[in-house]
Length: 214
Image (cartoon, rainbow, N blue to C red; front, side, top):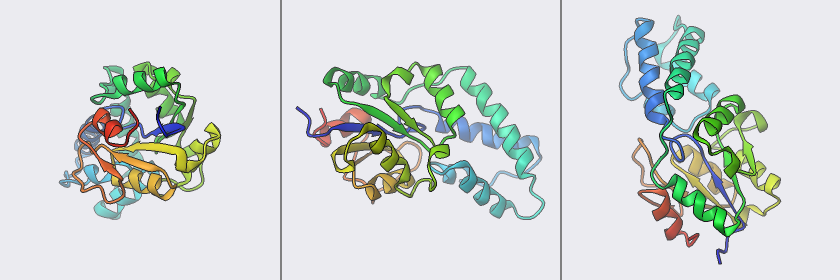
């Protein structure tokens, strides 16, 4: 019997292998605009919401950068890549199956906008697995603030201290930690020492076992 009353998951880079698609299509959008690629720039946006990402990109490219055109092109290219299929991260299905058999309620807490998050969940068939989905549109302060995780716990009617949170990014792990949850971090593209995590794992199943969830 698990000591946890609920499990809350990030989405991109944690359950869905979408970060590589996002970065590849982002650089493609820059190519279309004739803008130089800045090494590591788009990778640095992992875990951040759209508004924060836009500020970082605009600051790096400076005055005159066509931010709105870039965002539009990136979105079109990224959505087209999703239509071709969204791979899941290792252990995602197996862990959700196990939690379903335990009757443990699950939620999503993501920095994605609601329409995008729901579309990805529908395309992958994961939507029925979650009792609620908290997106950046649902809260006042995005990650690394604890708001998304606190809102997910509130909707599940579970105390944050009884929740286990799964994240891939330092930004998301900081949010879950600030919410008072047990944090399992499974890094995707960005290397980390897991400064905000209670458990740093190579995949979801390993992380769940380290935390005593399964």
